[in-house]
Amino acid sequence: MQADIKEYIEGFEPPVQAYLLEMRRIILDTIPECTEKIAWGAPAYYLNGYLLQIAANKKHLGFYTSPGTLEEFMEDLAVYKTNKKNTVQFPYDTKLPEALIRKMIQFRKKEKLTILDGKKKETTVRF
Image (cartoon, rainbow, N blue to C red; front, side, top):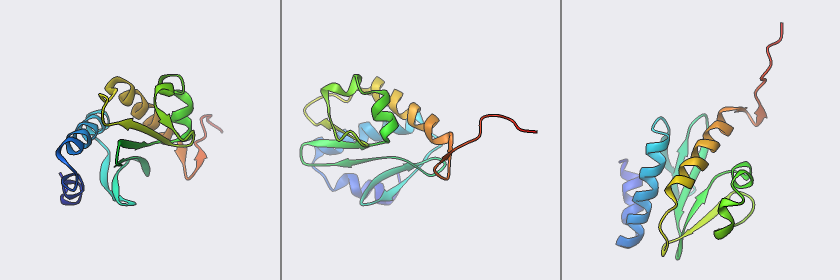
């Protein structure tokens, strides 16, 4: 674990640390080829550019993804607070929904790998 990521996690109380470590494990198990670093003061994950981010808050873990991901999983996320743009709040007093988080990460990865410089990659071959 990078020193800055370790330092970020260790800056919280043990229950929050456990939650952060669990989320980090889910992310790295799902996309082991990503890189992680501190960005905007919290752990961020990169693959073909910025992919997603997590951040500890007072009562919840913030999971920052994309509008497309939230739209795709709108029904599954109905029990969680979202900002309808890119954020899901996972309260510390609930178990992380690992299967849902993995699906969201895989969706985001696929979404990101089809975008180049903010534009959809061309999917048809031209001669």
